[in-house]
Length: 99
Image (cartoon, rainbow, N blue to C red; front, side, top):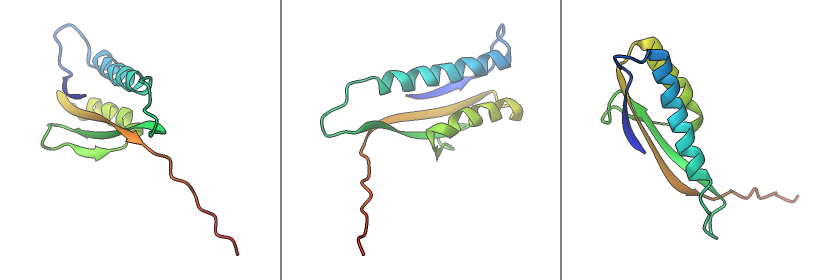
């Protein structure tokens, strides 16, 4: 998902529009996580970027997106850019040292 969300709408209030964007992001992530995993993959991971525009977007963690979307409301922004790219995730095995 690479999308610029507009928060200004003639009939919909800002708070409701922000909730709609958060719901759309959550729905997209859920849909991607429910896809069948290949044999060599442990889980679906996500690379995320967030910013006022596509050029200003910075790398963020998926769990920070809701907080950043809420901040746009307090900052009075009219639009923002979100990029969520699915990638294969592999669990790291912890090796225990024996003494």
